[in-house]
Amino acid sequence: MMSGLSIESPVLHPPEHTGGGFPETPAPPEPSLLERIFYGPYGVRAGWRIAMWLGATFFLLTAIGAGVMLAGVRPGFGAQVAVELAAAAGAGWLMLALVDRRRIGALGFAADRAIPRDLGVGFLLGGGGIALASGVLAVAGSARWVADGGNATEYVAALGQALLFFAVAAAAEEALFRGYLFQALVQGIGARPALLLSAALFALAHARNPGVDALALGNIFLAGVMLGAAYLRTRSLWFCTALHLGWNWTMSALLDFPVSGLMRDTPLYSAVSIGPRWLTGGDFGPEAGIAATVVIAAIAVFLLRAPWIGESAKMRALRPLVDDRVGERL
Image (cartoon, rainbow, N blue to C red):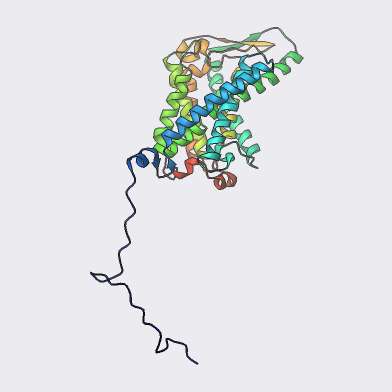
């Protein structure tokens, strides 16, 4: 049997319209002024989300700091940077989970099988970079090491303590300057402007360090560009932290130089700088000298060009905020 409309079935006619073709779909309503102010193509606009992150970071700094004081922990520099790390990373995780609706690993401290690679390569790159700059000073006769007090046990303990301290300090600075703030900036204004703005903020944060001068600030700005490039290539704050840590720990613990004007003593030997400040960095440390300028720039170029440095499969799956914009070349 053939199926079809019976004689009695009503005949359905298309709705009448003029002009032929299909009926026009009504245009979506224009967004209101408030919607345009607060919302963009990625949800809440980046500026508002950064303001929310800053507020959350300040709240967590205050709350965690008060808890540390109540626990009777001595409020030294080590405790301060640990609180900064907890506040900056915690605020970033809150923003990702509650506002951006993404998993907290997207911030960059994800549980990833690539962590050992990121830590190892980053540490060797940072440590090797400052060792190279210091080696140039030694060959030029502008750096040497003299005997100092202490013994092997004290030396090993000092290296271990410095490693822990600089690891927490590096992670805190990366969470502050390459964490949610930087990532939302990239999503909002693009990679290049965000890279330059975040590097300027990074330099400004060091503007009152002991012994700072124009070349030191220029090198810190360049280091901010280098670390931002490291994040954009890997999406890994593990990698950025290891790069930062390798540089600072090698400069301070192994070579006994000041780090950004701050000095920690290493037993057995002491570094002595000889020559013009523009070369040695003076009491700010070798990262304020021209040799460090060349090395930092070279590492930044290497990070941008090395084909084997990139985002892990886990980080791609987590969809960091910067993935929305960094299809563009840096």
